[in-house]
Image (cartoon, rainbow, N blue to C red; front, side, top):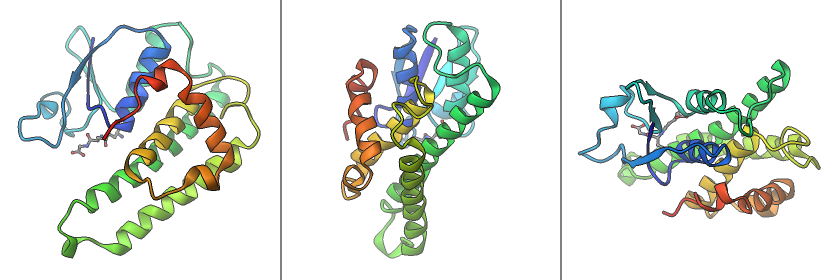
Length: 202
Ligand SMILES: N[C@@H](CCC(=O)N[C@@H](CS)C(=O)NCC(=O)O)C(=O)O
């Protein structure tokens, strides 16, 4: 099994953390989809990472499909609850974390365009998604130990990756000061080996 990923992608980091938490061995092939010589489109027609190449040649994408596959592949430390309602709520957290990343990545890409072509309305719209997403996560987490209550899950992994991506690309968003519950969760997550070993470095 081989994971095609970049070292800064929050979606790929989510998969790398699931692999590490579940002690699944997997070769990492670094490929940056924005480069001319990328091979990502050979495996994912959408040209996006992460892609998980299975031993039989099947290419799995996107990150949500991959983490679900991995959780079934090994019974060690399941990251998704079995009970249907809890499972959906964990996946809702994942959608929120990924959605914050989608908005943040959209701003990052917009800002790479020549200044005259950038849309400040578009950037403002994406920023609102990030701010509303953080506010919802802060409120829903509340005083809980983990997003899903008593146990660590994919919900924490997805949210932690979104917060890590904001640290990487948006140092101007002081989310730790404005969202103390998220700050507390992030500190706890960063103490885990799987998080500490995958912190994205720009
Ligand atoms: N929903 C996808 C998002 C993946 C994604 O957008 N990856 C970015 C890197 S962070 C990418 O490969 N972008 C290349 C492109 O859009 O062409 C997932 O969860 O895997």
